[in-house]
Image 1: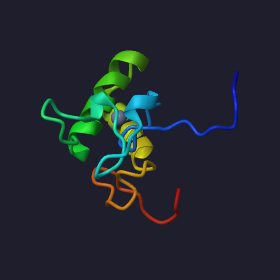
Image 2: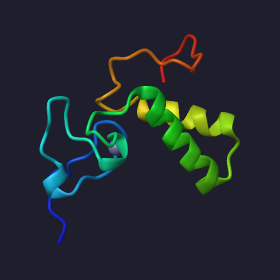
Image 3: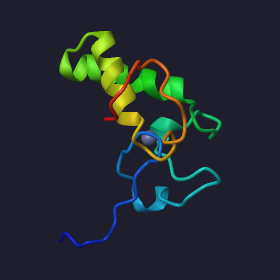
Length: 95
Ligand SMILES: [Zn+2]
């Protein structure tokens, strides 16, 4: 049954986290896909690459379109909120 309980999400890609994954580490909770084998967080460029590659397959997008969507989506997440949006050339109005 649904409640108003907040679902923990990966701060890096926004994926919902299982309860035992949701424990915040030093930099916040991340899903397995946003961690390297040694447990360190993947950098922005790798997370963008991963999501873009997924979108190309899942939505049959071009790499360019997939990358733009990936950057836009990931930019809203806590892990990246303070970074500059490389690869996007937004000018003027805010999004
Ligand atoms: Zn993630």
